[in-house]
Image 1: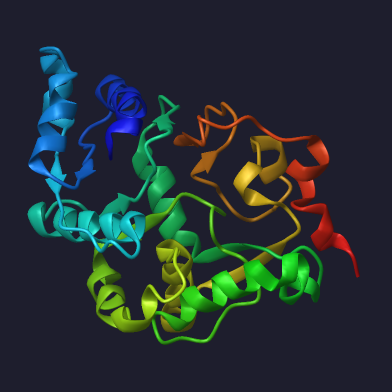
Image 2 (image 1 turned 180 degrees about the vertical axis):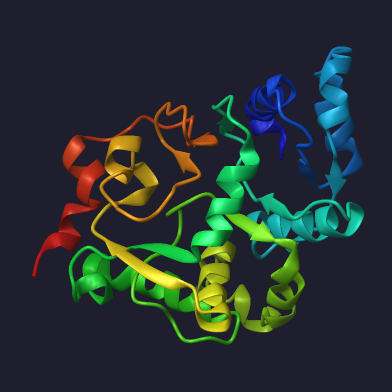
Length: 261
């Protein structure tokens, strides 16, 4: 969290405080105590929100502020609360959108042991947009000392992390090389880790998952999504609330330049 995103953070906190199922906490990560106090001053005495607020102040790595804040925040959450089994490293522009209990959704994410990947065609991830998506995934996997995976895992589903293997994943991060070409896609690296270390299966799709609505996601059989771009009552989260959905072709297939070949 930083000041330009405080309004989004408040909206997310409202969705947490209104959510009927407990326990669930919102742990915003700030770069200073001044930032934390500034955010909390916006609550205006709304005591109903306070029990679900778990603020964290972190010393960030300036080479990649966003990734380092998320990793430090996750480390603090799993260290401070022994009852937390899963944490989701969200951007502020998100909200809880369902009234269903989160536990079956999050547990299903773990139990299905599957990783959804964007792969525009069978062979051209290495060349689309001059290989930028291929290099981002390669860098993410290299940063934890593992081979790459044949698709793009970033934004594919909610960035969930599990307590049971998070600290092993964290120990594998090669800090000297992680921030050579920022941004470090920490959840893409975690998916690489889940595949190579824990044997999670890969599901390739031409869907551009970052912009997928529920009916698009439903085309991928055998996988239960945790989030969506549009309002969808059987997904726990809605994300990218600060962005308009693009044209349908872009939504369905991703960057059209990647469809050649």
